[in-house]
Image 1 (cartoon, rainbow, N blue to C red):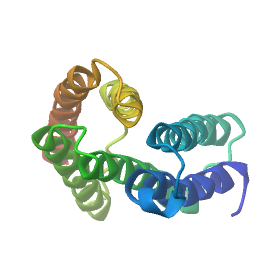
Image 2: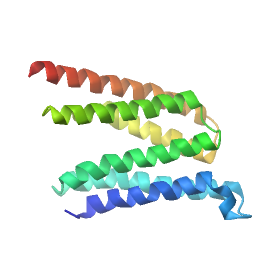
Image 3: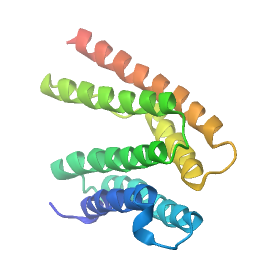
Length: 179
């Protein structure tokens, strides 16, 4: 049950609150300049994002997919993105509507997947869902670092996020109606 992919997902779960700490609890760090806190948060985010890639890759390639991993991996992903986007809101760096749309889609699709599983339907991650994740991660990295074009990347991530969410709904109804 506890294999390398699950350990990486669990590590990502632990990294999410650590990143959040650097984003929102800046007074705890005394005289450390805020740009350094951005670097620390970004470093944690990049390392956590890398574990996201490797836990899935290793699980598939080494045939180590488990029920625990099926729970831990999406939980870790959601915790990381939630910590990042709420941290960005706290820093007033991202458009609140864009972040609201992204987080709403994430919760909606998670709920849809729970319903689908309850009905014995498997709605697999699509290529658009994987592209969505990459764009959200890039946008979030730019927002954490407060770099130019961060807001533009955020809105691109919103568009891809909503598109991939529509694909999940379409695929769910396609499979559901075929039953």
